[in-house]
Length: 334
Length: 132
Image 1 (cartoon, each protein chain N blue to C red):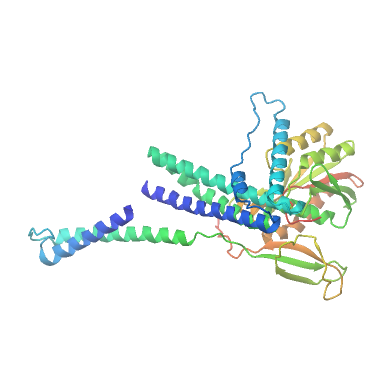
Image 2 (spheres, rainbow over the protein chains, first blue to last red):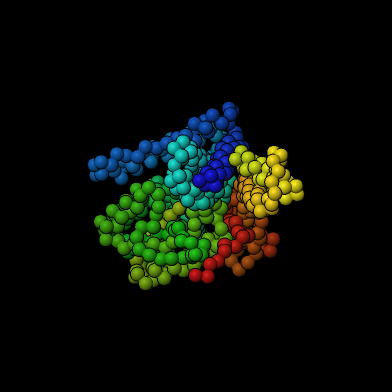
């Protein structure tokens, strides 16, 4: 019990250090980029304690749209807060600072939860509380360290592992005219293997995941459902033993997050009976939020080849298809 | 705190063991004969406790030393956008870089436009492989 408590205690000290560093990095980034006239520290501290209450799901009908609304309000509020904290920052920098703050918030939350169970375990002298905490600590620490390295990546606007999807979409759409689609996404019409591909990604290079659900809905409706297939590319969590940057193929809507976008995409696909395929680039949680690894960057061409083979096998020449690069577009232009 | 107490007790045990071994007398003054076995037991207990507490102290010191956030080195690859020019340079990431950003500086080989083609970090420590 003593050894376990010591281990948790040490990890807790490390988490506290990481959390404090996160706060420091965030405040420094705001001061450097946003040139505020007043000290942003109190506002940052208030922001770190920010929470979101999910919708009531006793009557689940319509819960997705309620959640969507709550997330929209949260996003808008966060952006407004960042603009107040960093008045001199442009749109890209506001997105990057928002991401930096979110990473700092995540670190703050992890620290507080671990501290809660540690104190509870000590207060109740419960071996099981401490044991459970000690058992999951390696994973918790890995995630916290990943967020810690993400802080600098977000503050500097470096691409992260989660940006694998947007990076592939950017490679496909680069050199073609793009237009904005709701919300925070860009689309380009690209000739691809004898088909017309509508390539979609979150608008970069600011830290932004957009709302691909809304964007795909718009594109399908614009084309009156005459879409031969939808291909989604995203970063996927790898299992231990699998290689980083491995490309895998499957079926379904490859998109994470709270599920709102996945729901919207699935609704539209079902309505028009559009088949959808998924291509994922494997990486672990640490790689997903820290600066992009070379292996992930090198997987871009392999993933494009895989998209090409899916398109050639599953669609006819002249068909219209949608290719979506899902993920955070930080550090990835178009 | 407990580690320090254990360490102190271990030292006491070692002193007692030494005293028993050489004089057959404990530090409290009572005289005993044939206490070599007891001295041996005390010495073993003292050594084990001392090494365990020292190990624990060293571990916590190392953990304190490890308490820093690793900032990986991020590299930017710049390529020439002219057809047929394969000029490529790699430099350290600078704030404001992003993939597909067109740079003002022309290509040194063909004077064409340069563009950032990749930004990535290189992981030096290769993941341990398990042959299963």
